[in-house]
Length: 172
Image (cartoon, rainbow, N blue to C red):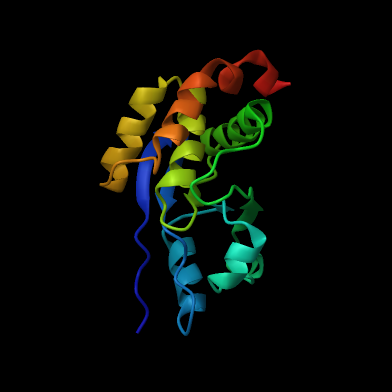
């Protein structure tokens, strides 16, 4: 018997929504897991797992499972409990996600637990929607029902890089 994934809708943006979740559960019911993610209305899955981490967690076929369920798969690896390498690139990535969500592509972001890395990407998207960093983290924490992100460094990084993330350069 398959279990339905816990998907937490963070915010409706335009005609789409942003959601977060813990990693999909691998194993015997993995195909049902992805069918249920798609049935929730998700059109894009954003994974923040590193390639070796995805393999270790049984998610090496995640891109194929998304494709077979008519969902786009995007990989944006960030080390567990880590930070993005470049604030400007991060801002561009979040702006692209923001634009497609506003255009109607329901998007779920996941890492290992759906707290740290998922929290900072989701916050980056919400910054483009007009949220301040503290408001963004409060909204994600409320939706996720747990404090996000994982570390003080992750929270500070988003706050310290706020202007770079949403600046005109993010849109270039």
